[in-house]
Image (cartoon, rainbow, N blue to C red; front, side, top):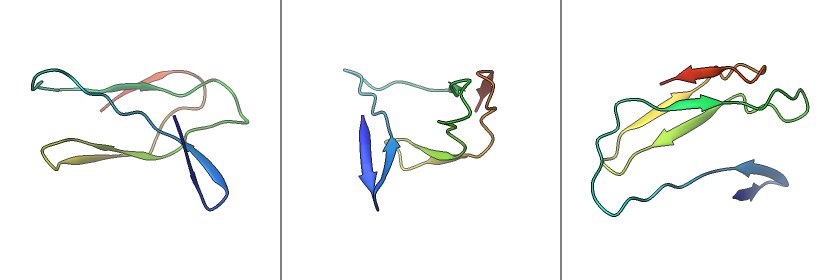
Length: 65
């Protein structure tokens, strides 16, 4: 999904399960592409917590939060 803000396209993803889930880690990958680097973001959870994502490697490598 793409959210457009101020003329800029921001990709986002919303995940919904049929029942409550306990999440103890999230593994993210950026695409190994210098033209579309996802450098920062925020993970929001239904309990109100959030995690800032600030260091996605731009080489397609995994990072765990």
